[in-house]
Image (cartoon, rainbow, N blue to C red; front, side, top):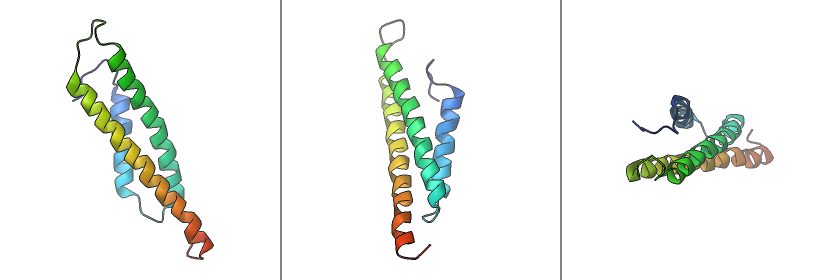
Length: 102
């Protein structure tokens, strides 16, 4: 479990929901992919703020925690992968529509 005063249960739930939603995304669900990429961008912004808070508050009564910073960095990479992948599915819709597949 990520033990930090900057990470809320809501943060963890939103990340888990995002990953679960990506796992069920099909390559022809264009509208869902568009919404997913927007959601990922918002969640990325939140986790980026968490990493900033963790780093900037080290030495201000909060001890250094390299494993936490590493894990938040990994979470940011996973969120970025969801963002890129869902955007690729959404962009594919233009090709499918112009070629009469949809």
